[in-house]
Length: 313
Image (cartoon, rainbow, N blue to C red; front, side, top):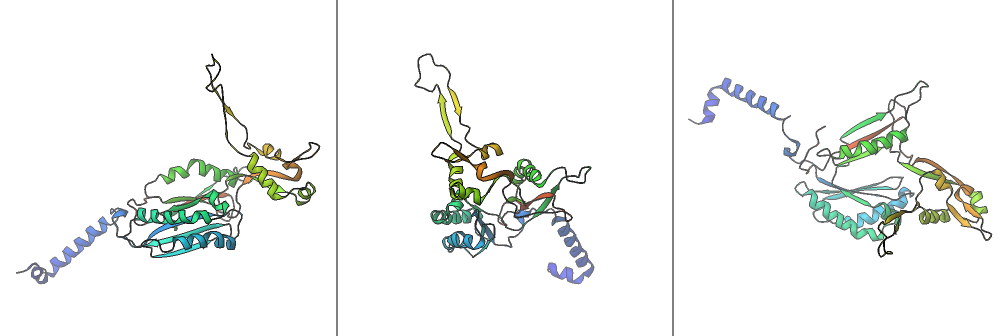
């Protein structure tokens, strides 16, 4: 008599065993680690670059299309998709079969990107091209907001909240096992914003490119050497490093930027042709809670599904 015959002759025993198996399976599913689950989605490698100040069409023609052309056909690639936003951000997703190792796929894509970098615009080269193995979908999002004071206004603005999250929380979340990437939605990164007056600029015989060159030449950070460095005079026992105050520390330093020196020695400063404001680098995206634009949030993106570690909130 086979085992199956016993269960055929005893339907009650068969039903009880089936229920026990279902019960054990129901208990085991929540305890099963994410990395033990079967791979369902293809491996994704994300390539991100930023062309500061460019529109979507310019970014697509000079950055996205160049990168796509070089990445296309990378070893074991399944298909490729891209998205170019109006603020100059280019996102390219390269998909591989589930059995492909994500680290190998990332290296192969990185090599193709390196071949395309010499032909990219200078603005993209300065900010760099990021290649990472992470899913572009958002796994979890958190919101941060400030309480209101007696006047009904928030105690801290978006600029403060964004900077606080960036300085104190982002690095901690990135170290959580299984987190692929963390991004602040509606980020307000501190930056000096310069507003030029076209009339005053033209009367001084200057152009916006002259202001840009002055910023690149005078807002730098470089080593100034050491005082008393060897070879030195006999008896010299102390070497003092020199620090050159060459970078802007506040709005006043930026306003005193020298743009032009006249024939009579007259200085044309940035404050003579415009104004400087300490604000956020980008205001393109706003985040809100209950319809109030007074908070900053960040989202955690899951890793590629071929990752060995799963994200557990």
